[in-house]
Image (cartoon, rainbow, N blue to C red; front, side):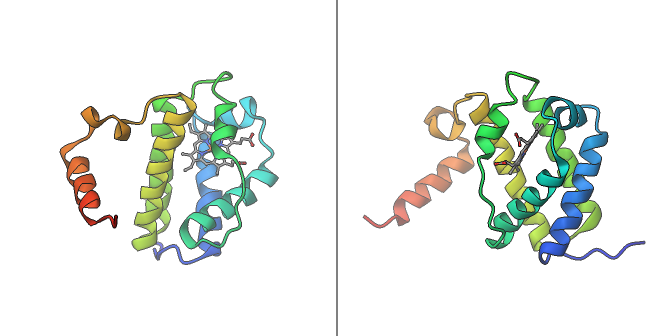
Length: 153
Ligand code: HEM
């Protein structure tokens, strides 16, 4: 049995990222995209991803980059569709749950889901449902109505 704690800082981020990409590299749907299609330099990619998630969770990772541009470049080279993003998210969530539990663990999964949706829709030029009023869910409608009521003029 292993003790599970929350993601408290850089040390936990490093464990999460290392384990996540270990699984990704072994995955049939995703592994070859990193190793064959993008021919990634792991010694550069892993520290970049530590910085990325540290910036997302704790605002102090100093990440700078262009995630949309970097993923968009892969679109003409391979499949970067819903199947790939769903698998990415599945492995990410599974890894977080395997190692951590708590508020930050829950939060990082929500951030990953939001970003996967944004990256997927932007790189495939799919219109964002939130900007088509006809496609809003009742929950979104209520949320935006509440926001309009509280927004200062
Ligand atoms: C189908 C799913 C995905 C695949 C196959 C994928 C693959 C890649 C590859 C190959 C790179 C390196 C690109 C390069 O350096 O030229 C990269 C970079 C990156 N990925 Fe992903 N990715 C996926 C989903 C995601 C998601 C959902 C996130 C965020 C939650 C993410 C965050 C990043 C970031 C932050 C970088 C570094 C970008 C930069 O250097 O500016 N990726 N990804």
